[in-house]
Image 1: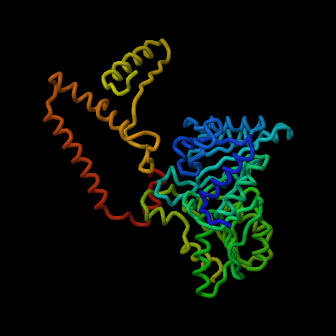
Image 2 (image 1 turned 60 degrees about the horizontal axis):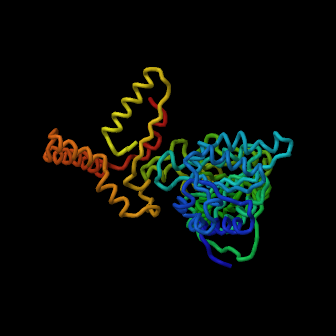
Image 3 (image 1 turned 90 degrees about the horizontal axis):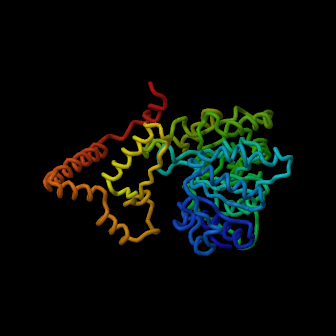
Length: 325
Length: 117
């Protein structure tokens, strides 16, 4: 058992994939000589060389398109998109090509591609560098979406993503890279579509992913002080989505709030809320709540950015409003 | 071409624009230049040496080159540039002071200007 931060856990997953599978190679901007914009690929260029650690020009559509082609031809490319914001320049290659090859070829063509991208706000990086688009990708048939929140899941899900025969969007929250946790030395994997209960409780269910798991846990701690026990569920993947774990929790708590950093309008929390309504209607004591980012671009001002992103206060206020707890 | 050569870039651009306007098709101007600073404050610039950056700044700064040329040609004097630097510094200092002395925006400002009025 080793204690790693998320950055190290992802690095470990990439390293072992490069060491054990000749088909694996990395593509991205500044992943080689520069050692990675978020230092995830530090040392790789020296160790594995320019053929397998491919520094690419600033052309996201070309990077994803070329990686898709390589995956179709039997390689196992892992792309680093630096951030999910810049990935917008390559979204056509993701949605119109990588995601559809299997279906349009009647299953003859596989695209075993992993696209890693930093997601999320809170870093004082302003409106164009602070967005959460993983929910968009989760709505596209043919794509899978991982949203790990701790080192154990980051490594376990990355292993699963690399082994998957489909394109996987691996969204890494920029403020969680330093998050520390225990990671077994031996091989293990984390399956997609299996949420984790991070805190057990009987009074209300909070379902979240990524950084919002920690915000939800903070809210749960404060609720506990007044005798309200919240159960906190970490979704871990958005596609596939583990509805069962949420519903099972709601059968016990009869109340649920979905917490998401993304904008409220059209956010993935709306999809989850609707699904839970349908599946757990008879168990609910009130409407499924949602706490999301306010529908404005991320402000540069620190105080305003903190207001834009959900915090424990807003989660508690939503619970009080909906359920009078 | 040498992208550090201000007048050279101007001349080449003039020529390129003339050719395009005359209808003889597109023109590609490749101006080789050098970035004095990193991409951002997070860029430690491990990919190049301080000596390399220093040498470029010292010997091939487009602004410095133009300044030297203007003085050699007797178009401007050292004191003109000192005054220009002073003015530029004053503008920036004033902007910084304004920003640092401005009150924090109120919470409701979060929702301003998402759409134009």
